[in-house]
Length: 317
Image (cartoon, rainbow, N blue to C red; front, side):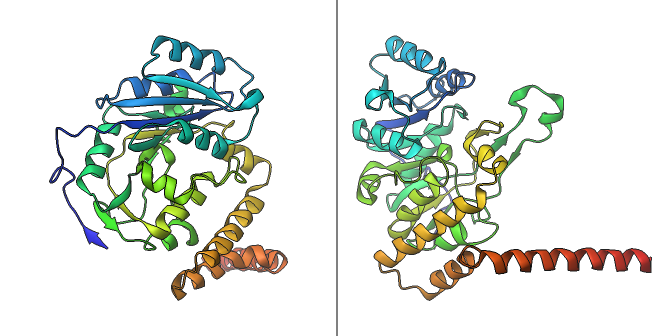
C-alpha cells in the first residue's frame, strides 16, 4: 500500500481522455431526467453517454430517446434485442460493447452526479498511472423527497479505508467483501480504465441486479491497483423501488449474499489465489451460508443472551 496525497501532482491539463458514461435504466421515469441532467452539468465535457434501456415499460424510454435526439453527437440510446429485460450486468456489458472512451464511468438511472465529479475522477486516475480504478465515498440521498424528516437522514458513507491511497492488487479483497462491516464503492462514484474492464471480462450476467458491482470489483481488485479518494461527488438515491430495497423487503438478502460469496469462492479458486488470510476471511464469511441452521440457532442464542444480560442489568439498577 502506498500513499499519494495530491491528485493534481502529475495531472496533464492538456490531456482530456474521452469518458464513456454508461447508464442502465429500468422504469425510472421519475428519476432519469435528473440523472441525465447531472451528466450534462459536468465541468468535464469530453464524454459520451450511453443510455441502456433494460426493457422499460414506463415513460423512461421516451425520455432517454428525446435526449439522444437532442444531443446526437453526445448521447446514444441502446436496448437489448426485442426490448428484453436482461438485468443491470447485461445492460452495462451492452454499453461497454458500444463504448469508445478510454475511461469508463457508471451511473444508474436514479442517481446523480455533482458537477465536479467527472473532472475529479479523471484528474485522479490520470495522476495515478499505476491505478486501474479510482473511487470515493457516496452520499446516501434521502432528502430528494423534499420531506423535512428526510433532510436529516442524508449522510456520506465512511468507506473505512485510508483515503488518498493507492491499494495494491488483493489488498482490498478482505475489506471490500469479507468483513461484516464492508462498504463497497457505489458504481456512481468510480472511474476505471477501459483496458482493465476488458481484461476482467466486464460484468457477470448471472448477477442481474444484486451484487452486480461487488462481483465486478472482486475481479478488478484481485489483479489491479485501486486509488481511493476522500471526496464525495455522487448521490445514491434511497427509495423503496430500488433493487436493494426490494431484496430486503422480500427477504431475499440472505440468499443473494450466499450466491455472491459462493461465486467469490469459485472464482478465487479458479484464479489460484494463495493468500491464506483471504481464504480464512472468506471461510468465515461463508460459514453462515454453508451452515444456515447452525447459524440460525447461534444467532438466536446470542440474541437471547443479550436480552437476559439487559434484564439483569435493569434489575440490578
